[in-house]
Each structure stands twice: as C-alpha cells, then as structure tokens.
Amino acid sequence: MDKRKILIQLDSDPQASVFDRVVAIDAGADEIFSYAGVKSEQVQGLIHGAIFTRGPKHLKSTAIFIGGSDVGAGEKLMAEALKHMIPKFGLRVSIMLDANGANTTAAAGVRAAARHINLSEAKALVLGGTGPVGQRVARLLARAGAHVRVGSRQASRAQAVCQEIAGRMAGASLQAVGTASSEELAAALEGRTLVITAGAAGAVLLPTNARAACSSLQVAIDLNAVPPLGIEDVGVMDSAVVQAGVTCYGAIGVGDTKMKVHKAAVALLFESNDKVLDAEEIYQLAQQF
Ligand SMILES: NC(=O)c1ccc[n+]([C@@H]2O[C@H](COP(=O)([O-])OP(=O)(O)OC[C@H]3O[C@@H](n4cnc5c(N)ncnc54)[C@H](OP(=O)(O)O)[C@@H]3O)[C@@H](O)[C@H]2O)c1
Image 1 (cartoon, rainbow, N blue to C red):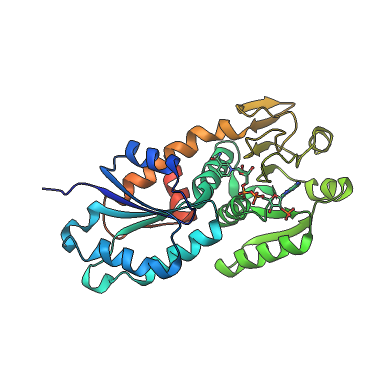
Image 2 (cartoon, helix red, strand yellow):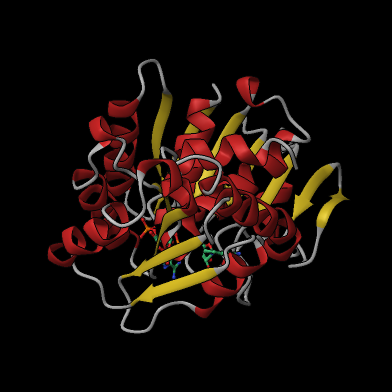
C-alpha cells in the first residue's frame, strides 16, 4: 500500500508561505511539513530525514517543495538539496523549485503566448527581463526558439541575463536592450510580435502610446497584478482580450493557468522519486492547459 504523501516545504522566508501550503493540499499532499527560514547549511539534515526514513520503493510518497520570496536563495537551497540525495542507492525524493512563484508564473505566461503565436517564429521582448520571473520567461522563450530581446532600464543588466541564458543553451537567439527612455523602448519594440512584461509590482513598463506605435505586435502579456499594471490599459483580468488587433492578457488572466500548473507540478512529484522540476520541466507540464 502507498504511504501517505508528505510534502516537505523548505522556505527561505521567516514564515513559510501559506499559499504554497494550501496549493499543496489541493494538489493531493496528505501532510505538509513546513520549515521556515531555511539556510543552506541546514539542508543536509533535512534531506537525510527525507531519504533515510522510508525505503526506496516508498520514497515517491515523500517530496520537497522549495519556496520563499527570494528566488536566489531558493536556487541555492535546491542545489544544496540535490547534492545530498544518493541516487545510486535509490535514496532520493522528487523536488520542485517555485520560489516566489517564479517558475509557475513564467510557465503560465509563456503558455498563454503559445496559444496565439508560434513561439519558434516569435520576435519577443521581455520587459523587466532581469527579475526572477522575467529571466525565466526569457529562458523559456529562447528554449522554444523565439528571438528574444531582454529589456532592462540598464542594458548591462539585460546583457548579464542574456549571457546566463546563452550559457545554458546553444543557439539561443538573444539580444539585450535598454528601455529607460521612451526612445529606447520604441527601439526595443521595433518589429516585435510578442511582449511579456515581468516588471516589479506597481511599475508601468509599457505605456499605451508605446504599445499602439508597435504595429507588428500580436500578443501582449502582463504578469504584474499590482496597480498600476505593467501594460497600461490591459486589464488585470483580461484573458485573450483582443485590443486593436493585439491579444492581451493581464496577470490574473494568466493566473488560472498558473494555479493549474502549480497543482499539476506538486501532483507529479508523487509519481516517482526522481523528478527535478525547475523552469523547463514546469513549462513542459503547462502544455496540457
Ligand atoms: N501572478 C503570480 O502568481 C505572480 C507570481 C510571482 C510574481 N508575479 C509578478 O511578476 C512580476 C515579476 O516578478 P519579479 O519578482 O521577477 O519582479 P521584480 O524582481 O520585483 O522586478 C522585475 C524587474 O522590474 C524592473 N523594475 C523594478 N522597479 C521598476 C520600476 N520602478 N520601473 C520599471 N522597472 C522596474 C527591474 O529591472 P531593471 O532594474 O533591470 O530595469 C526588475 O529586475 C511582478 O509584478 C510580480 O508581482 C506574479
């Protein structure tokens, strides 16, 4: 008989996320063990507790979820956790990274775009492309074969993101662009068929006049749900709303897919003990929605 499904939540924040706990229950976990304020040096003991208890054939019923608002800290916890699994003896458990919702949000945003545009032919611009969500959006678009401009108020920051993505995949088509002034933004938009804004909460990255001047634009997706929104005049609830020939999504319009992807990812953790779910694997799951 299968054991009860235990999700071990490792959260770098002082208080573990209630959101992630609720979703975990809705996704089918029977028990959530929540650890807050987790530091890298504490991970070994936590992983040993997970892998040395149930025998290998039952380890698919134990899994790890890495959360917290600091995505960089989450990435470090994930790397540390993987270091302490012992796959050659079958002593491992499945693991997922979704610190600050970055992977599920990016996957849902790119999935929304793929419903309307062939990503391998898309000419994309990711505004706010240097944040954790924007970096993942750019990475997933590049992986799908799009030509991706990564936007930042400082082109050098965008350049660092392009280099990081290029280091992960051969042949990625990337270009760093500055977007600090309206002239730079207009140049960044030139010829683009897809714009995804992943700017900080409450920051307008794409004003109406700049969007209207981009005649090539087909799809515009905003991931910021905090007013003022990232794309001016795209409603937060919009989901495939066509405005002047452009298919638009707001953050809550994308949110339904994000929630489905998050639940599907947690459920998948319990199918075997060898899943490692980061941006690409989570985007793969989004294909069904
Ligand atoms: N729906 C969901 O479940 C969900 C989950 C996670 C995140 N989100 C949303 O997704 C968006 C991206 O999240 P994130 O954590 O990656 O964002 P972030 O790190 O806070 O910001 C992303 C980028 O926005 C740019 N930026 C910051 N302040 C700005 C300003 N005043 N004006 C223009 N640009 C500014 C910065 O880029 P430069 O300095 O390089 O220009 C920054 O790297 C946020 O709006 C967040 O609320 C939604």
